[in-house]
Image (tube, rainbow, N blue to C red; front, top):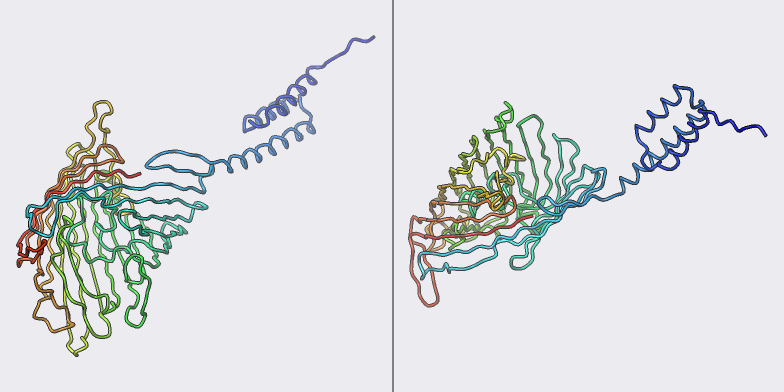
Length: 466
């Protein structure tokens, strides 16, 4: 019997086939490189090379498809589930704001109280890497829808949002309640559009430039249009520039912007009111306008100057109401408001790191509390705000913007604040708020009736968001 001859080429082919059939699940660019080497050394014939190369290609396609179908679960600022290719995701989040408010005048209408200011649950994410969405509800009190929108990201310079969301006016309003400077927003934010239902075109046409143009009902959150003859659509626009981004300064914010809104207001929903920053008493209140409808226009100016851990922020908001009352009296009433705030991160965090989307987002402390003896992040701040509605008086003609007796048409407020960022998702806040009224405001507590020319309050909040 002739001895069997097993040539080296046959051995190499056998080893190659064994490796590629046993481990195709791990085929990648290295497999192709190995095949090329074997072919170059004439260990594999052209036919053998082509057959094995095709098997590698087929397996790579199967592996890629399998990975695409897999879900990746991670926790960062909430639970996020995303597809392996990054095309789809869902984030489950929420916020809890547990407050306490104490007022200096025990006889006034403002009771010292613990409160759940907000208790949100939300789901947000994206589909096909282009369609962003959010649904959020507030369960502090009667459950109510807050946000429900889809934002189609066709291009960085042209996105289209539709649903219920915040209209583009007022930087302090557009900044989430989780990330504002103080526990509550200023007096100037009492008469901005805020949450409404509509559609918005927005985007960044150039580095450091953002615009937004919306059309909405003008009726507020969770209210559909009821009378198109008296209550037309609101058109709101905003244009802002961050010069620091233009020049590439990542430690600064040089933000300047303006906004404008115009629309018709139904006379049945035209009464105006404002409360203090401490969520205390309602100090400004008017009767409804009368006539066919009210022409309401608003404009605002906003600025932020920040470098490193120091920030100066301010806004001015003007409201104007025009029309003719049912008695035939023409009116033109203005309402002005503004605030200026100075804040300092005494632990050194840069405000620019929390500036995203031309508003403020999550600030991350340099070191979390309790980790390596970390103190967390600490911030102190002071704010002055004013509301001037002196065009509204008790002696105005009926239906032209009449101030309710016992309320004031001017107020200003000082707020001092301390904020402790325990970690990126947990914070505690302590504010002192003093509000002064131009005329004493009437209050009733039980059987006792009196007046107050100022309100002093200490407010506290513990917040967890994810």
